[in-house]
Image (cartoon, rainbow, N blue to C red; front, side, top):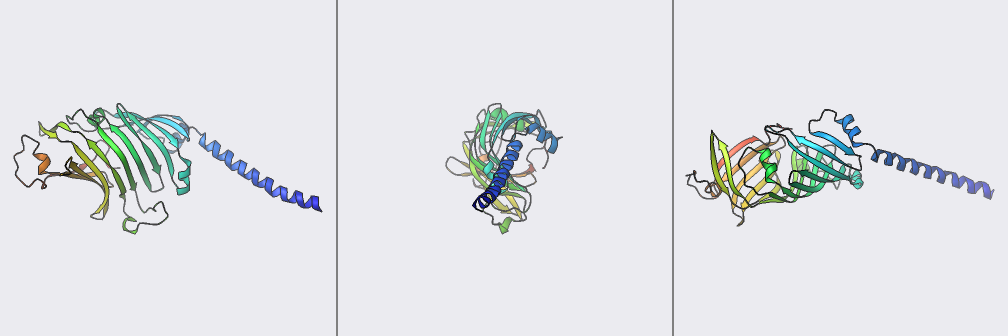
Length: 279
């Protein structure tokens, strides 16, 4: 009787270990799946990715953004962080390279949102000139611990609770970090003429803000003395609202306006990237 009882206890344990082994084998097989095969299966006609190598766990891709002039081309390398699956998200450590631009941070993708966390590095002037057709200062923009979360519908916070104030609003629900730029002379083409302005050293502080029943990314522009230079607002449709103050416009030789320095004197609304359109 003792031998029968002992063998009956061993069988469930063996089945459990077999089950654990099968789960681990399936997970290992998924992680070793070629990233190029997954891209072909789930995004076969994407214009942004040109070449993919590696697998789900670790790999690299050549990407391009088709702007109105020449496309912006670069590379991305990722290393999967599996613990984000506990929150129902795919998360990875990402390195983004384009010419002299270097960025590193975490990217998380959920069912209704994407998130960038602790992104740092620099955006080279060569990259900026591909995005806007301006004569820009030959100085990079430093990226300091940028974190963004953008959602496309109702979403739940990482701790499981729902933020009622932004439950059904698409757009940017979280934002933090800074961009710094030493500035220099900028040439802005308008009406067949180039207008020049000397951009002072500035800091762009990121935050999320609700305005007109929308979740917006707010970029507050200030100089080294924390004096206001302007505000940028980006909504979930990639529409950018730009407001510039008298203090900043005084750096333009052709500008003759008179107003208190904190007064917004220029307001423009336009798509963030005309070549891409709103997505």
